Image (cartoon, rainbow, N blue to C red; front, side, top):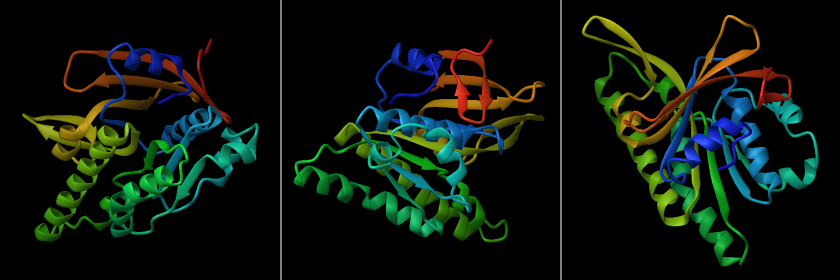
Length: 234
């Protein structure tokens, strides 16, 4: 996986290959979709093929135009955009990804090397209901199945997986912590996480990188402009 920010590539590549699921999470509007599109662009520009699943309401046409500045047709030919409308659509799409990969292999074409889901829990969150525990249990079970299938695809076909997730909060022993939406399900399957935070400067962002449950972590700052994240802000 080729991120547009050198610090991210250096940190994760210094630890291991991109085996397993990488999550990108944070509050609304911090730049998660922008970074995801930049990552898709970098991989597509290198000649790799990307499946980009976008589950939010409004498709980000303007962001795509801003991020993909050169060789538009060539790059877009290497990115397959998908737009599920319901959580059921997303669930079925994730379980059909292997058929897309196999069809490419049968045709003798190079297969997809990156799957991005933006976001993995947006449609899931819309269907959660506090007074229907049975339905919520079923949603959590399906979320777990999707992440298990994505892990399977990553291992069997050597496909990198980047999932965008939303920020949630949990209270433990009287203290409130920021966590990824999806709770224990996400904690179990995610191998690396990238959290983006706002700072007191308008376009500056703070990044937290973490490898699994280990102590390997990195914090750095960067700038978000209309074309995406700058690699080495001054």
